Image (tube, helix red, strand yellow):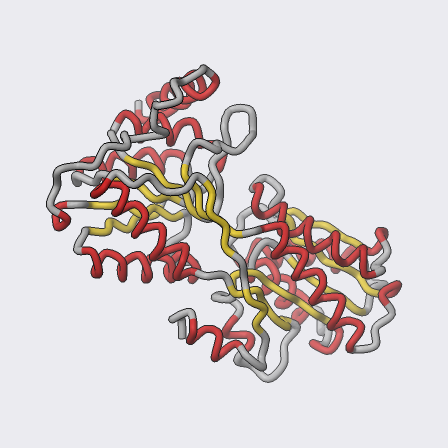
Length: 341
């Protein structure tokens, strides 16, 4: 029954979003401030993988906002469509007025919007943007994410610079790309890196892509990497990138299993939280990462939702953050600046 109900809600959401709503109709939950003591404000923060360091850090900073402003933060995980449906019901039952979510499936956008309207929940999305029935971003829903394409370009430039620093001939270098193309922001990251590497002179035929089916799961990243390494034993030097640290770490672990030395691998990740343990080691194929601001993604989203509920101050529809390149020379200081370590 729950699954049938969720499908019905998806259809309702699609009809709602493909129509012509009034320009003064809010995306979800209404814009008017509520006459509620701040201690009674409750905000749900749902992530797709509670074991992932990035999401744990987001929650940490969201909790700081809750402590500062005196509201209750409800932290929950939803790994699939049924989990999203269940957790939205959960926070509504607990009396929450708002939902912050990084959805496990961006195609659930219409369903999530419809469900939040039904439960009178204000909606703010973080990290991965919701998509409508036509596959396009739901621009009417407030979103905080990263400048994915620009960050990806920065990764590609850093990979090319390090390869040249090592004296590598780019014509002999293979680019291992673990892709997550079904998520818009992930595709923008890897596409951006590829663009910069091509501009630097890496031949188009030297790019080898492997789909990473379950992001945030290291073993699936290793499997995706092994496909590339098995198919191209002729490549002796590698640059590697993906949508986040875990994808690159999966490639690095795969090279270690095949006895490819760290000197012949340059991996640069994105987010900076999962890769920090490798940066503590004297030498691995994990060379660097782009540190994203988990503080902004956690604290600022929770703060924005609180202000929306309390004062009717609706968040900006689009907010983008940038990153900082970290490696073994500066990661300790940069993580400390972000309040991570």
